[in-house]
Length: 285
Image (cartoon, rainbow, N blue to C red; front, side):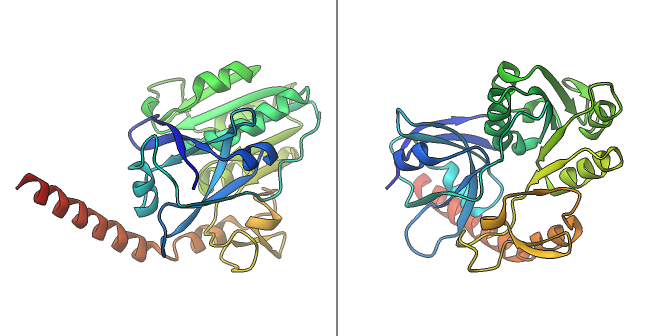
């Protein structure tokens, strides 16, 4: 079972794990992801983008936000613990080439999966502008890593606690209207953010890729849970993506599907809360 080599908390609910996975580290490419299951049995399987890899060490880096039962259980694991199941690399890697000026937009936890893509685009010889957005400065992650590779780094926060008080679409529009108009935009983050990034670039005919994180079970295209409408056709995020032309994605349909299991997710979280409180009460006696 994959061993956790290092654990670090990046913010209140965001964690970084360095996990022993030599075969995945050797094969992974920018834009690909893994699917993991925290415990044996009938636990949920969740997809996480590979944020980085070290083939020499045989490790991959995973960054995730604690939002539901599975990510809460994952956040409780520590260095020396094992993850029950981990498969990958999955999905199509990012097509990396020198196109000129690449703008990578990362929103919230979406900064993590955007990092290896930004890194690869810079290594290919592109001018790289990175726009990072979050609600406040405490939720900004990987600033040092992005600053080390970007020609220009723009930070936006909703409350203006760091960087510009603006949504990421504001500097993105300014770039589209500038003399150094992007040749390619890659946006990764909450669906609503990706939707409006695509709407921002569309009038300027700037090719825009988005990386989708949908409901996913097997990661092989068999379950159909990750299906999305792209250009009027049904596509599967796990095998056809995760990256698609943002101007063709039906974001409204995707966001509606993402709400399908909200009641079950809430119920599982409540049961986990009750179990934790019961265990704490038992230990206090």
